[in-house]
Amino acid sequence: QLLAQPPAGTPAVAAHALWTVADEWLKKKTPGWGAGHAQKVRALLERYVRDGALGALAVGDVQTGDLYALVTGVASRKDRELLGGERKGEAPHNAIIVRRALDAVFRLAIMKGLIKSNPMADLRASEVIEKPATRHNAKLDNNGIKSLYRALDSYGGQRLTKLAIE
Image 1 (tube, rainbow, N blue to C red):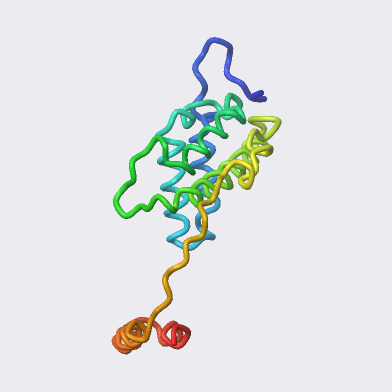
Image 2: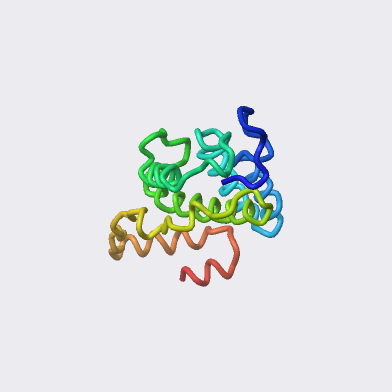
């Protein structure tokens, strides 16, 4: 499926590796993003693509089934332990971010002439990622409301945020 393919019998050229294209895409896109979002997308792609089995594969060798396994694995965290500060509930959201980013990476590979079609195109997030049921917080009783207002008095953040909470 590669258009600019290395000679038969040779290993995939690093320029055609999925991670190489993903890293190029990140370098192009992240300057326009907020720092937190850019860091999160990069960290997820490094964790699940660069450090995973797909990162070294040539973009033309990546199949939709490989991507399905990756995205569902991220959504369920079946292959990874939680890192410091991570919560299991973030997994479906992280899978959506990985899916969306890889879709864009494959579109870049098409534009560069490395592949003819996008293997992520048929993988819809709503069809492969099961979001957990919404869990609502308990309502505050009178004592809880009083505690909230006391804490709000000492809130050191932006005034607009404080007003919105009030």
